[in-house]
Image (cartoon, rainbow, N blue to C red; front, side, top):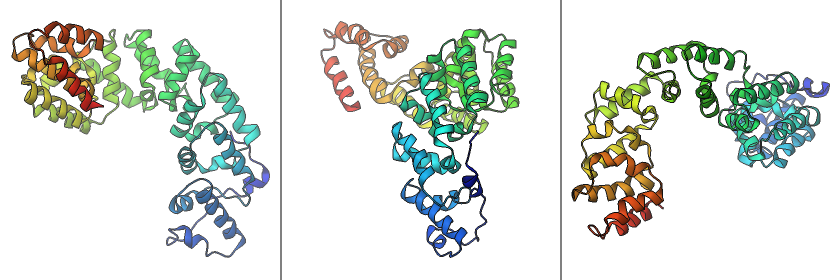
Length: 375
């Protein structure tokens, strides 16, 4: 928790402003001592933290100071750790009380602990920007034991750092109220420890949802026919929890425009859950290329949904253009699409370009042209 000086605490209060006080200019009209202090705070937030007048006004309702010494020291810590001005502004706007934290007794020990565990300045900035209130957590009672708990789950500090950087809230929330119960639920469902670690490492944010939603999503994935022992189970759980039911229905509708029934969508989802994690525009663009440019039946794609996830400009179009030529000449079958898109660059050139230069001399030039468009 923060350890504010008695003088600093006396100046932290929620200020009731008149409804018409909607700009910094109005703040400067007040003449009382309290209002002059408020004006100083708002001016500081604008000039030293980069807040807009409106944001400064809003923040001034929750924090007030008459001198810049402590806020300057707090901001100095962030600057010394390489925080960009926009990042500092974001942190202050979301958690202005941080400016009154004791820089030496409160902030630095927490920052130094996180850095001692392998969190670089770049990652520290990302974590604090993601959850500014993380620095309000007690070092001894929360940050240290929570980090060690996550590290023990993932079996290394390095993986704990990676998980926290991707989902900072797992370090902020109480692990006994969030992580532990959901992990117990996953174990009871028969999910292997390695797959649980995968979920924490790459999709830790799902453990910060309400337990009821977690349980409902888990049961829904089971009902869809996923095997808890396979990695696709936790991938599907991540996808289901990352979107609302409305978003899910919209994406089913997008695939439906290409002739996929709901059952076909479910089959594709079981084959490759991440096909439902793509944006609606990405789905539309990929399907349009495969169907209208390459000339494939849309149901061919439903049997190979992994192909939709690749970058349109850097992989689907360049390699798909080569595939189109080979397909039109009868040199390849539609079933070769997955291999063509998933192999390494070296293997692709060897197997699908160099091999067929005798039959199609233009292949390399075509591929290079399409790759050039992606640059």
